[in-house]
Image (cartoon, rainbow, N blue to C red; front, side, top):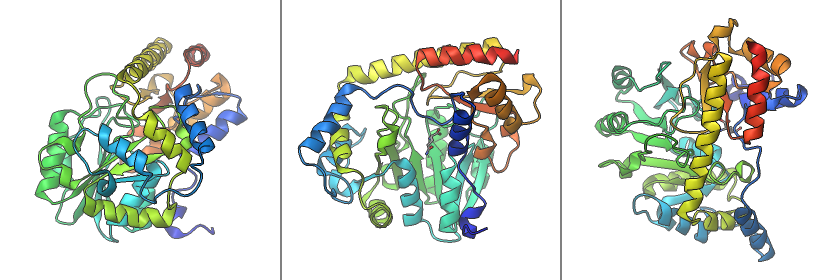
Length: 378
Ligand code: GLN
């Protein structure tokens, strides 16, 4: 084993593994969350124009002035673009920057499982102590007692994610207010991963930074990839009070220094897209969600319709498999459909074994074909 101890236990990410298995089996990939349709022309044209206009050298490390202006202008509360916004190579980088920039070895960080897999890996690199609490199936609500118990005098940070990958939950005002109350009481930082903020299909997204006294302790993560179908552009950003922003930038300057300049310029104009773009975007995603939820129910899965994100966390236990991994291998080989086995998103509870995550950021035709193939399970 040559990988350093701080990373060895994590192995390859589940997304890379299952995208490879999809290719090997010539299967429809409902695993890793990326669209199988192209980005809108106005976004692609903006990037091409930026390259032609000579936006081809390093940008300001913390973000191109045009993009940080656009981010600040479209944020829900007033923020200073030069002091409170940092642009990174996607939110996976921002997560790493925020943790490495702010968390010391031995600090406790509360993580809610199931979680996006990079949280724990970054905490391990930072030498932090993760305190895990579980969202329990089937409703995946935040349990007040478990959350209260997780906080202590050594809590440095809590990582939350709403809309939530992989459960599809959009946390309610009550749930977020409880997080806020406990964070204030314990003087903890809230790292709020909101990369699916534009993918609220039922209900409303409440950015926790907008709750009373929360702006000054919240780092809000957002990104371009989901909302403009450009996951490969890797443009993300953190909005945070300047004291946290300085720490995030300390890590960012030594990680990637800056994100791709022409893509930042394109992102600056994309964020100013008319309201109608975002409305059509969610309408289309509702159609995709409903198609896949209904299809999965017909095939025999137990499914709750997700409130947000482009993921469905379905219960596969009616089919009698031992666990999520054996189920997903069967699915890839026999049905030619790939889903993600969610045990990779848990470290405390066994609940992931009975579940499978499907991504519905796919064309209607792909989703219909996937449902037809899944009939082989019946
Ligand atoms: N967030 C994406 C997902 O959950 C994956 C991101 C990645 O592969 N780095 O599918």
